[in-house]
Amino acid sequence: MDRLRVTLEESIITTQWVRDPETEEEKSQFEELISLLMVTDIRGRDDTWAWNLESDGGFTVKSLRRRMEQASNPGPGLGFEWNNWVPLKVNFLAWRIYMGRAATMDGLRRRNVHLDSYLCKMCGEVDETEDHLFSGCQFALAVWDCIAEWTRCPRLFAFTAKDITTVHNQVRGSTKWRKLMQLIVMVTLWGIWRSRNDRVFNDKEASVEEVKHGIRQLSLLWFKYRAKRLLVTWDQWCNMELSCMSL
Ligand SMILES: [Zn+2]
Image 1 (spheres, protein in one colour):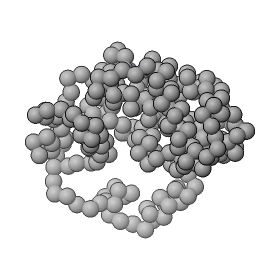
Image 2 (cartoon, rainbow, N blue to C red; image 1 turned 180 degrees about the vertical axis):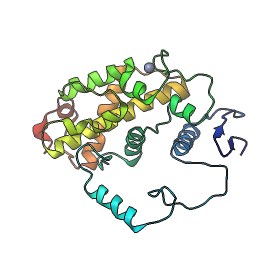
Image 3 (cartoon, rainbow, N blue to C red; image 1 turned 135 degrees about the horizontal axis):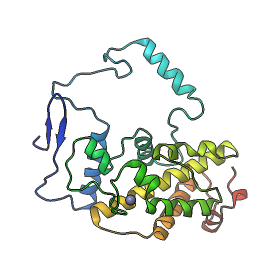
Image 4 (spheres, rainbow, N blue to C red; image 1 turned 30 degrees about the vertical axis):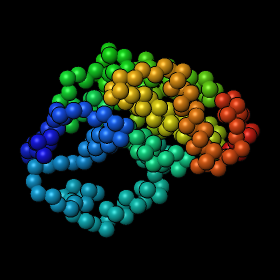
């Protein structure tokens, strides 16, 4: 409990460990913990159950009905769309970005986590906000350029990280093509996030080419096995031969 001091006004997390997380498992558990804290509202009082669709925390059928209507008919551009062609953990990252809750340096600062520096580790030039890391940083821009070139889609125009999570809605084509574009966007966000974590936690630097290769490999793996397009080959995937993809 000394890691988390909670008062009525704020919660302060300190990460002065005896030693830093070392093994892959420890690092991923630590990441998971930070991510959970980002979406958890901790207050300095006893735990209670609350219905968060009402501001006073009380349950009402009306609020439940309203939420169910929204979920079944979110309308264009509203609401976050989950994609079952990618694993849940990748959906969750995109969802956290959509909600402005990714565990970036700036996100941690907003949760009162004290760090020595809040600078982006990829460029070291400005504070690491979500918008910077996923859309403004030179590293992210170079990755998005590669993705645009590969998919032959115009380069993404997104001023905020949240815009990126819904950009597939602006792509022309069939529903399945848009779903594929969403898959590629989600895997790209995942790839940027993984290489950022490698830099932050392991001091490992990946080139844009390596990140692009990883994104293509992972996205093909999930497209083949989760969207059941088992016959798509690596060459077809790299050349975006859509005629082989049953879209
Ligand atoms: Zn940067």
